Length: 168
Image 1 (cartoon, rainbow, N blue to C red):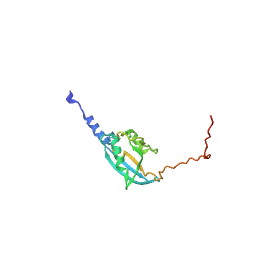
Image 2: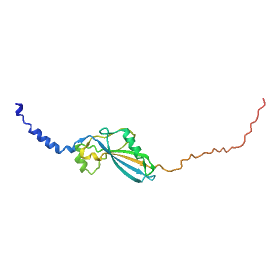
Image 3: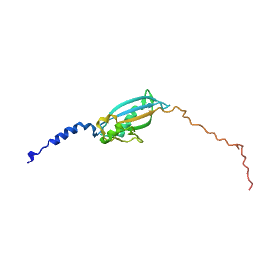
Image 4: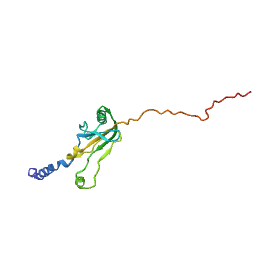
């Protein structure tokens, strides 16, 4: 009786499902870094792009992030300071895909990273995985005079005081 079981419908389903495999969210194994350099007037001087293979799926570790920041904070013999970190993670589900593509209202997936710690990404539809990125923004420090201003205390009653002795 088990030999007569028809499993053709399973094979047909698998064939159809293979056509849509690019639309299922999958784990992320690489991430793109976009590095932006700003001058003291907040104008963009240079932009770099770099792909990075993750040691842990869906996560950029704290050490990897620190290494990326330290490796890129000097450009053209100028030392930049970290200005901002942003994360772009396009984590759409398959049912959100059509509204995302045809809706006139944009859906933003850009988040500010407030602390240097592990950054976790949600699984992404395969065809959009190369859009996930971390944006590092560096800025040249301002060249203001870093001198401490001396403050002179002027006492208007700056007269010599005479101490009188009291007789006992």
